[in-house]
Image 1 (tube, one colour):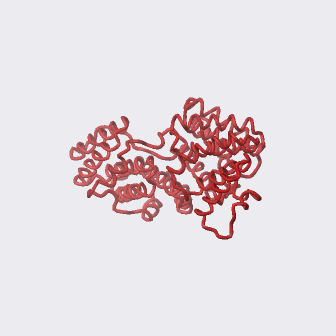
Image 2 (cartoon, rainbow, N blue to C red; image 1 turned 45 degrees about the horizontal axis):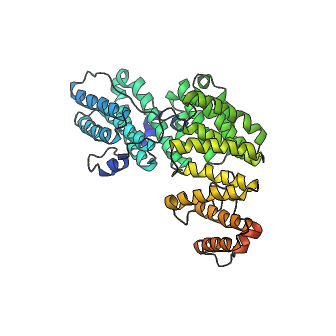
Image 3 (cartoon, rainbow, N blue to C red; image 1 turned 60 degrees about the vertical axis):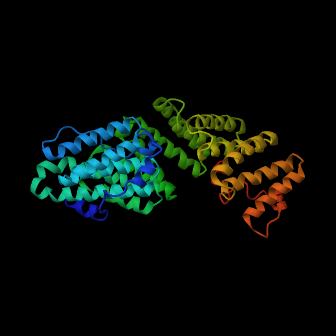
Length: 419
């Protein structure tokens, strides 16, 4: 118990503001959550569900509103849920129910995280943590009432904050928080330990500390809790395969990725983004092994799922289409490569703009393909257009043709070269 107030003190902010709701409602206006709770992106992310009756009569209206908001979220009415949660927060403040206030702030943070607003989600997670800290102060006088449940719920909010830090690229902050949670009393529960191990592996991977990440995912794979949680088990296999791919151990990477694919198809069915994600990285392995026919089939399966679930105008769909174009080019099928490349540019220019590295990458490929097809004037025009965007007076169109140095490099496109 002594460690928790110290840990929470680093993350205390005022939390929920009862002021203008316009920014929140604007973010919630799409009524779409990017990831349902069953996806691996949500491992360690806890959304507090409906509450049973409470003995404190002054808190009962807040509980009823809280439960009503959860019902609206279950039906996809994010904007309505936000308004109701704000009303519940006001009542919780009046009744001085910090525990209820913490749960409300936590849930708003989860909504924002689901929608990809990571920085905004941190404000609400920090607000919840501040409230849990206030609850913790009461433990000296009411241990029996608060100790077990509130301590565990506070740690769940800390997991949420760690995931938001990681998603926002604040890897050092995420790892510091995870390490603090690891040495706190509540981390002795098996499920929490498996979450912590997964989060450490994920953060290490994002920090490009691949050896440490691999240790964490392998540890997760052999934990008893993981064997009974297919989502976590699939995530462990995916993490291992992804790191082995990054370490260029391509033959070793294939087996855990295939295990992940089998599990995710059982969990979600074939038409799901997590299945597409797994197919995509399997395609990358095959691509780099120069197994082009198989790579093309796998990329095509991934793109088909992404187009149906995410639509054409989504970066994940474009990534798969990009590598389909690359495989066609590697197989010397310039016409099919051009067809794929043209489609990508039509979507990419609209989505990302002419100066985005992804669009530049495909524009260069298009110019090279024109050259390969013998259409020299079109090639020259296309590559000159690229040079105008790049703005480097040292470059000439012939540089792209002679070296193709911009194709397949991370400098131009994050989706390039089986990326």
